[in-house]
Image 1 (tube, rainbow over the protein chains, first blue to last red):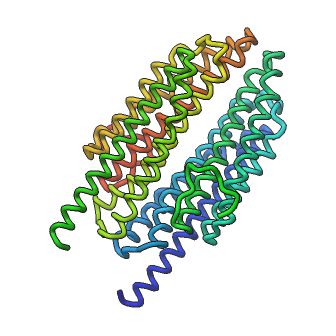
Image 2 (tube, helix red, strand yellow; image 1 turned 120 degrees about the vertical axis):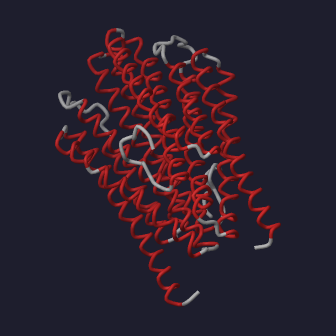
Length: 225
Length: 225
């Protein structure tokens, strides 16, 4: 392969990583804005966030379009091959995280005349989920399997937090039926945030596979690699 | 490339399609068993279904392991390349559908001492979601973009059904607080089924891309291709 093609190939891999990071940054912003719209009852912010989802979707299609020629023209092997196939799979997770942010905004709109916050820990849970997304993508770009493993370990904290929310809010809904609609919507939001954390965990597991060439998916999370 | 390698390559592609179909058949069974466990309050069935999830996960890792050498060794182009990259992405969706079936079984276990069925249309919704999964994979194996398009169009029916369930059950929960726990759990199940239909739709969109080489993802569903 002539050297200028090699250089072009390296540039394309760098651009691919860059686009994944940009998509990740956008998705992080969407989670933050969606949660803020819910806790502040800000309808305009909810609508602006929903409108911005098409940018997330655009990255999803664009990154796929970048990966296929890389596979077809350059016959990458080993670690490069895993980088490209991991990118193809990561965009699916990032796109779904974007959908979760839209779902949260839809709950903001449903609840706009009932601004009461029942589930007090939602912002904390959102911060955790965002951090996990950011760290999983940092791990991807730096090819840092240890950071990816740390993300997998954080997932338990989110699951515990969600369990606590259910235990706290369900009895209140039973005691006071006027809380049913708001409680239900906010517990759904906690479920969306938990799912965002799951997607970040999936990304982190794929990064471990990309770097180490072995899968930890569907195993208990190890203490170290 | 020597002819025997060609034949081997074709056999490997056939085996890949076969494994995706097997994974799909297993996932369909998981949805059916999970829903039946919920509506009949059958704890043993719920536990057996949860235990079987590791088989779904096994396919997920195995199919990835098949795709990477196909990409690395055979330098597939055009339609074959799209077949392999689509397979890589489809397993992610199928694996998540398996997780949704597990989530439904967990609700069966939560509700085992409260066997009342509030959301009467859950079995119908489950049948629809299963059918969409089966059709999306039939479309994949037959490379049938029209069938894939039909799946995308069915997704609206599931969304409407879910909306109706919320409108029916939420007021009953408000009137009778003793229904809060069961109603909440069953509405979560309806959400899991809706998400299964979303995954089937994602698969169908990927099949359209695989066959036609153009993406309809994130566009309004066209009437025909």
